[in-house]
Length: 263
Image (tube, rainbow, N blue to C red; front, side, top):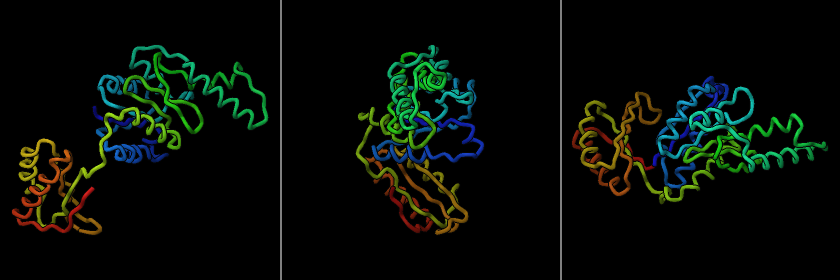
């Protein structure tokens, strides 16, 4: 099972807001010995969201989607999820109760009386309208829940809410947790062109099937100037022998190694 992240919102794509979800999600995954496989950034477009969510539901991946689950006209995620699943939308009874608790709490703080059938309350209940058969994701910040169907999970766009809800989602999958360990080793290589090192990289991936070789060239690195960060990542048992083979290959090539990195 791969792990994917979908980040939704025109404000992210326009630059009005900076995305903090991906960095936090990677951090939460790392704490559990897991890795992020893919990320998609999508605007508030119902047709495109429906298409992408249909793919997510069919993928079998563990997916977290952030944003667009509110009840204003520019929020389309709940509706798109229902369309992708071919299911009607329905007010989730547990979500309604949690939202009602929040409504009452806010009214009490303001010294006001409130009823469940007044227009403001009914509009707030819309935030608990999910695809039929969905289950809720608890929101420790303000009780307004997210939801999930299968392995696809939907949380708000607000980081203060989304990030603890992401943790809750990941803890649903203890079978995917691994002991935290070194997953990447690399070299800072100078005196070589990336194209010249490609045969070495290809040979290593053929020799160690559980390993990916990566190359990150820089022309003006603040510490090492023109260089290539050349490394290996992947299967823990193969990591060290693959790294040793990489290092020996670079030395045999005649390039210089400035430093070695472990992550």
